[in-house]
Image (cartoon, rainbow, N blue to C red; front, side, top):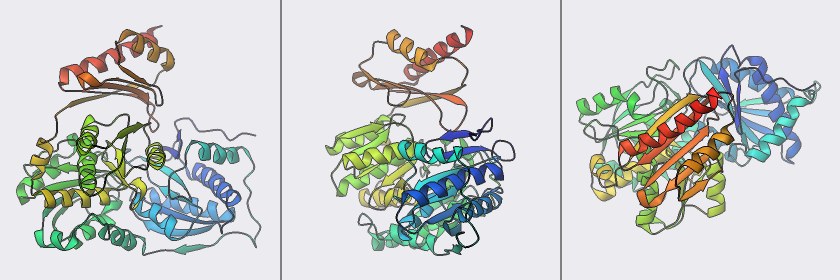
Length: 463
């Protein structure tokens, strides 16, 4: 008998997420984690070691215990990292030569949510093919092992230190010069897992840290997504401390947003743009981002004389495209920077270090760095995902607009390169909504594109 996905549980390529106690329960965690463990055990010739980590959410310890029991029960050996950032956990997969990993985190979702991020032995989240193979195990009886074949469990307390050391060893960083410069940094870790690593990393880079929300108790004082609208408290700290820059993470510290020295958040798209600018000062090569990322990243690549490519939204999609293109840097416009020199996953620690190095090398303030880039306006909106046929909406919108570029790899992406405009219209993989994002030199232009897409959604609902 097939496993019935609970109503409200969001199942994406690399994991599942839902509201704790409703769609996401210890039973659901057990079922999915046992399926992953059995899949990883069967698919690998290596010893079935699986890394387990979690963020600071109050539901994390409970769900992590359920995940550990399920993995051990199907014969895997669990390496428990405790509370660590997601990129720290993925780095540990490679360190331990594990067959995969489970990170209990709902990333940017509200506090009542939690999730499982499922990773392979490549220290990357499952791709579409791997996820399909894993989910086939959901429809089979759980292969619980007898007493003499159950897995064990060990604790790894050094994963955070290894991650910090990996960042400090990056060839792009002049650590002695950074320590001498002594940047003043305001840091907001939203009481999340980044508090385990980021204050130490910044201090070892010589920064004077003025931190807020550094107690990782999972009781988020602001909405978890580090978008500009949610960073008012950090902006105030920057101004009060006279900081050179403000840094804000999401709960699992794979995304980073910036605040300039005037106490203004320019928007999370600039994180990748500035990180890419630093990398391309040292090394030439392609840049990859997703379809919903600002053109500022393409502009950085163009100025460096290197190609840029857009992949479907989702970290694994960007990472796979980076592999195929041989990209030297990439990521997503939500503040997620991927640096292959460390690993193919988004990492707020990498983003922070590269940003500080760029400020050091150029001698420019954060506001000067942002001000030197072309300005665009991004308009974002969401709508409930109704019962209408989105493919029909895509066709109608495409037919109604005189487009120059059309891309269907992830919903519908329409581009007008000469006018420096684009529209992206896609169903969310993490929430039951449709996302509409448009960018143009002027806000009114972008708003009209979003309104046109919203009108088509409304029309479908009425039919």
